[in-house]
Image (cartoon, rainbow, N blue to C red; front, side, top):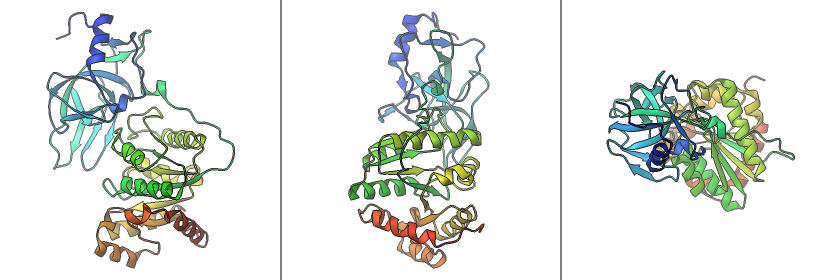
Amino acid sequence: MRDTNLNSQQVVNKRISEAKVAYAARPAYLGKGTRLLVDKVTPNVGDLVLARVRKIGQHKKIELTNGRRARMFVGDEIVVVYGNRYAPDQFEAVIPDTLAVCHLVAAGGIASKLLCKHDSMQDPTVITPIGLLGNDQGKSINLSDFALKRINCNGGRPLTIVVAGTSMNAGKTTTAASLIKGLTAFGMKTGAAKISGTGAGGDIWFMKDSGAKVVLDFVDAGFPSTYRLSFNQVEEIAGILTSQLHSFGVDAIVLEVADGLYQEETANLLKSKNFRKSMDGMIFAAKEAMGGKAGVEWLRQHDIPVLALSGALTGSPLAIREAMEVVDIPVVTSETLSRPTVAEQLNCWLLNQKTVQPASA
């Protein structure tokens, strides 16, 4: 049933002001001229939508723009963003063709239609879209309207280290945050970015808490997630975020690439010559020794300088010993990365890489 006076501007303003606005919508400006678009509209990636919570499922809280996780109740109105989701440990979902009932597939505020889920997950929270948010000219409001732009920076590129991993929950963000902590403790002004993934603030706050002076993610580049984006779009996101960090005058940049090496967007980005040229080296995160060895071999096949192995496996002394037996690079814990001595270690690792011939040589 359609709400009475749904598009009365006063009513719309009140509803938006009282709605819980999700993290993924944070760059958007919702002024008093914001409208609700309900007729003959097709959702696109990045479109903002006002929705009503219909049934609580896996996500019982929604992450707000300030990072607070607000509890949701049936009947609550929320402002979320249409996007696709890739999460083998949670959900795979794609945006629907209409304003039909769909799902909240990430606490950061991603509206999508479930395709499949991990056995450990409950069914996703069900939401009923009320209308796309539009500007005063009747055009849908999209994250791309507020996207940062690539900046042409003069001078040398800051030290840039990429963190990638075998899969979700391999310890990538902990590895990146620990490295940020160590570089900051050494006295380096450090910037960080999450290049790919699904819009949520947890990783961003972790990096900030570790000492990064500025932290960005793909949401700042105009996308709620990077699943199903074209190669050119993902490569452009990387270029935008690194150039923006460079413009802040940082001494070092730490970049996290989400998911695992077999995830399509991740694999394509890491194979990119332009992306490889933008980094000095990589620290690879893995859950166990076999994944670490296979990942290092894959990366070397694509001429990526892997400096060290870290991640979830380093929580176990036994797993560390196993990894040290099968890889010829340092295996380092989060504690080691967090120390100021990591800056000197990075220099040693980078020098050692110069003596290693790439696989394609």
